[in-house]
Amino acid sequence: MKEKLENINFKYKVTTFTFILFLIIEALSPISGADWKNYVIGKEGLVSSINNINILDGRIISGFLVNFFSYNKILFDICFAIMASQFVKMCNDLMGSVKTRYLYLYPLIGLLLVSVFTFSYNYLSVTTTVTYTFPIIVYFLYFYTIIKDVELSKTTFFKLLLFTLFICFSSIYLAIMFFITNFIYFIINDKKDNRVKYFILLAVSFFTIIISLLSINNSLFYSNLDSIKNNIPSMIENVFSNNIVLLILGAIPINMYLYEKLKDNTYVRVVITLFNLILLFSLSYNFFNYSPVNLNLVISKYGGIFATENWYYIIYFIIYIVLYIISMNYYVKNRRVKNVFNMLMISSIIMMIFSLISPLFDVGNNIMFVLSLIFITCILAKEANTKVFVKLVKASIVLLTIYYLSLFAIVKYIDVTRTDYIKEQIESKAQIIEVKANPTYMIWRYNPVDYFQLKDFKEYYNIPSSSSIEVKYFGIFEKVEKRIKE
Image (cartoon, rainbow, N blue to C red; front, side, top):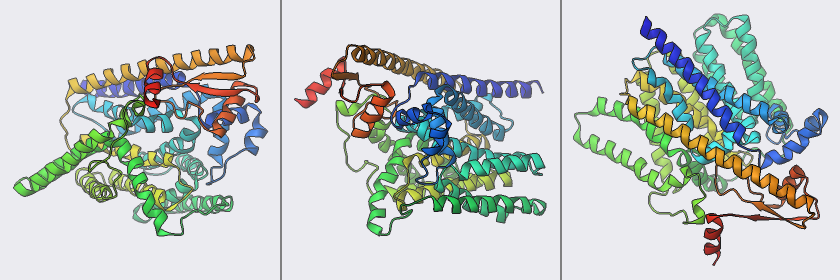
């Protein structure tokens, strides 16, 4: 009993630590990219925010919230910290009782091990985080609520209805994905007394799809196969290559399953080893995706057989997903949890298909696969009795915390000094405004480099339209840039 209480106490400490850590990281990170424009819109008030909602792909609710949160950044920081800690709490609650309490750190480690592009795009950019990450976490909350509240009381049903509206009015892709997966769950659910409530939720999601479709002027899908084929390399890169470390972690339960089932077959063991080696060799190519510094200023990204953008890698990742789903269904014994996990994987596959067949698809939707992989792998670690290396887990948390806090302290310093320098130049009425470039990838589109970014950047910093902007690197990065240009 005492050990159980200690585990519960530790679990809530992890949730609290997640909230504090991400709150600090978000507070240190500045707004950038599309957030500059949305800040200006939000600053003009509620009417302006409503009139400038981006409904290109059904972003009705999220279109309003990006304007609101860009201007009210501190509220966004708090909301994301709550969302991240809630995600960790969901994972740990579904783990239940564990032999080693340090398993409760796995979800947080997973969130911190995403690529720098996923981190900057889906964690820090207000626009993309509100559009994609927030609804996806609400999607997880929807199925988590179904697992935890078996009887679907009136209060729970109202909560699920709110979740449904938020998810479906955030993006047409999320609405379609949600409708399909919820329909499948509706079919396999054996609680007949709840079917009317599920049917209502399905009807609501269906009508939101119709409303969203009416707001879209562009073609939702490609009309030729060539466009779809051309999208395969970018889909592989965005979904798999950019998060190769998470795939390596997800391969652990796959290995355990295969060795348990095929341990007496020598040839199969060789195949399993090759399966793992492909991931490890691919990591050597994709280390660019985890470097916080723009290494392209120093060396260029190389190609070759282990470049995961090659079309044939799609075959490998299809095998990976199939084996992952088989392992998941083998180790997870609770039928309701197993059904939800299958829904998450189906949802991820649907989003991958959308990335291939739709010109309006945004890479931010790939957070569905990333979070699903973290979510399921953490529970599998417990269900498959994966050995926990306590010292390694502790060291990982300490090092990742120091790494991110140090890195974002530097980001904050760069932003503050850049802002001060810009203000000095504006006050001196300089015609050419020098803007310090951020050499890291940790902030999405921090450096204004194209026409629209320059326009939004000027409005955000109140730079006169007659002034021109020159983006400059500094310190050692300035020397590297000059050497490359020479």
